[in-house]
Amino acid sequence: MDDGTLLFKMIECRVQAARKRKNLLPFPCKPVGLVEFGKFAKTIDPRIKTSVVLCPPDAVTDFYCGWKFTLEAP
Image (cartoon, rainbow, N blue to C red; front, side):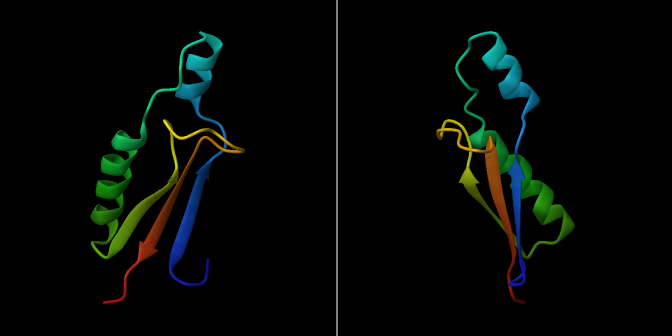
């Protein structure tokens, strides 16, 4: 994206695919992703703001999870 925003979508997820094969409910990974992706982005540049687009326990659509990374103005 041209406005300093990167959109990341996970089309396939090994963890969720394995759970589906075992007839388990999706793992609610949104809280984990908020911490993991947020800290990862801040390590690269403290101005990067991380937000969730979609992540279980949200209903899966054409991708398993989506994250938005936006570089805030100095």
